[in-house]
Length: 165
Image (cartoon, rainbow, N blue to C red; front, top):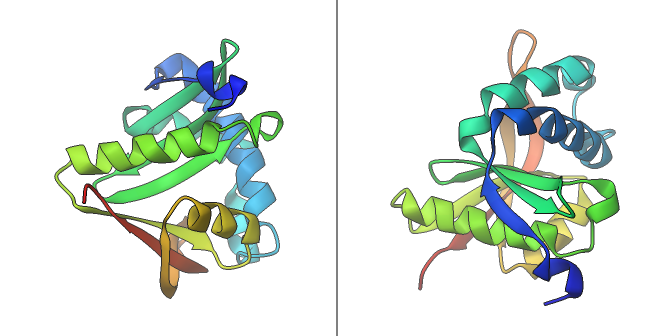
């Protein structure tokens, strides 16, 4: 464990964390998705949309705190790890790995023996990370992202991991 990892605290998100989560989410989403998702989706992923969604999703969110600041977060619903993002200055510190491990625990607590997540096909950095963490690319599919007029199909790869055994 690196020195930075020893100072990472994980906790359930609080309403006061929503602004930090929204900022990290927007920055990370843009880093991993611009050029890899339909333009109509990019158009609706405004700062306001991230702020609204972060506030609505506090109950599904675990944050990583490093040096008294939110450094990253993960959102889990049922067996899906929906969002994993780390603030750019905190990438490479072990925050993402800790969040992903916590997400696996949350999925298992929900009674599932397998977790899954979607990664935009062109997001090579994220795809390498998940592979290093022991997740398996089980193939391409179109993820139905929430768009302005209903779902927008986003070319993704489904990654999965068997839990607890």
